[in-house]
Image 1 (tube, rainbow, N blue to C red):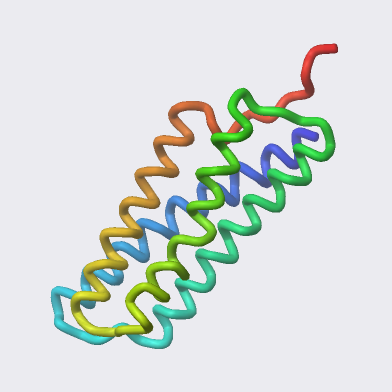
Image 2: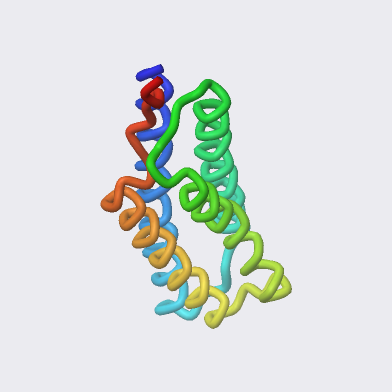
Amino acid sequence: MSGLNDIHAILFNAHIMFSIILGIWSGIMAVRNRSISGNFWGAVATITILAAAVVLVGIIMAVSGLRIARMTTYFLYMAWLVVIMPGLFTLLRGRDDRSAAIAFSILSFFNATTSISMWQRGLVGPWLMPEA
């Protein structure tokens, strides 16, 4: 099952890096007073799918019997990461102005720091078989 641990770690790291890139991208759009482009909305969908893929691998590992120390906390944080970007889009009612770009920038950096915090506190792995 170490292969699943590796896949989970790679996807989780990709989510952190993608969050930082989205934060920079939307920050640049806000500074330049540009509206959010369709490419950015595609990136928001991509980061949501990426977070869902991390959760899916986590579910597969949990069903396979692998465990982490605080599984409930892990799944709560991951649920946040899956729903928050589309949630912000919904709350802003699809706005694409400077304020929306600032909101997405702040949220992207918040998600990155949340994910880094999860990593530092051991909430993402390694997933191990419980001792019998």
